[in-house]
Length: 193
Image (cartoon, rainbow, N blue to C red; front, side, top):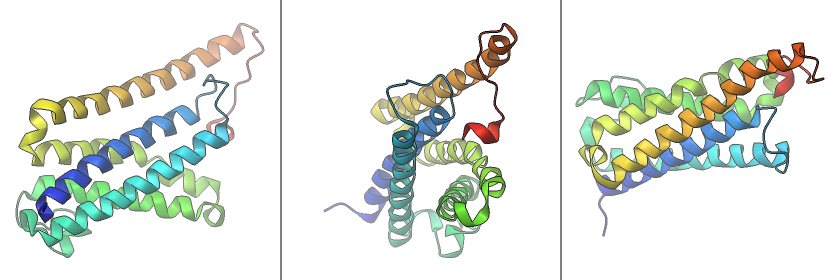
């Protein structure tokens, strides 16, 4: 039977992969030149569902870390960054990543009540959530520095870098396309989402 520590490690890896997929989809949703075969609503639904799944696995990751008394995790260190008794910096980064993900999920659930401007401001935090979670993951698990887990972490990094590069390429091309008279519309960031 797996221990709480094993369950915490496995759910942490799954949460990281799901968060990576969510970030990649989130970056891709707002790219105007995305594949025309995929409707924006389907991409948003997949992005939302992956984010919720990542949050669910993150909750199990945190709960099993507490149950297994991993790294001095206590109730306070689950929500207050740098409150863990052991590996304070790396655990603190994990807490920051978790807090940011919780803020993203809650504000997304309340999007209609908050208004677009506030939701969008909080959603920009997602660009900090992913690297913080990745550093937490890599620093606390020696298993992730070699073998298949390292390759998985590198694949996550590559996926996000490629998605960000694809998005940036679209942003950089858009002004040139509109000034060349190609008829491409330039829209504000608020209108694209």
